[in-house]
Length: 114
Length: 112
Image 1 (cartoon, helix red, strand yellow):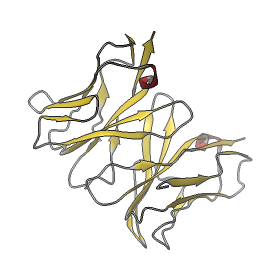
Image 2: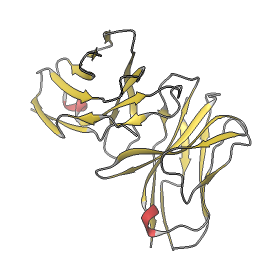
Image 3: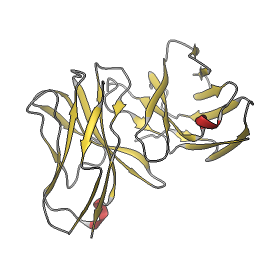
């Protein structure tokens, strides 16, 4: 099946800067997207999600933007902290699945330097 | 504490020796799923379950079995493990369709 891709495998940012992690998806029918954070030795942790009827959603220090025209998803992290260092995955749900068969991207490694 | 618990965390076994990785969630979630994570391949779904006694194949089901006799438990069974099943396995649960999964801490399996 079609898969979710990522523009950059690694991203290095300075502490305090804003981070932007990008994700491209190829299935225009995808209706639900999630960002996960995975720290070393741990399972993926839910960060934020967005449905296809929205183009922006904000959480605490994080914002997800969805551009359906170009099939692009991004995760913005404000004032990046050392604890944000992790691998970030985007995941999509493709109907007729209903969120229980998510399709994951390969991941982007975020490294926050002091 | 709301969580998904997998056991064991680490397992080394020999080819052909049946094994079971247990998964339990205490959040009364309907949906549960197993994923494997491999370098360069990301997370791939093995099996999922939408409710008790309802299971279905994911993207890479070959060599695996699951059961869902109770809502909270979703064990992953490898009847005859092979070295290509060496991987990091994650169990996950979700309260309802369309919501994100909560993942367990993972089981690192090595088959020699």
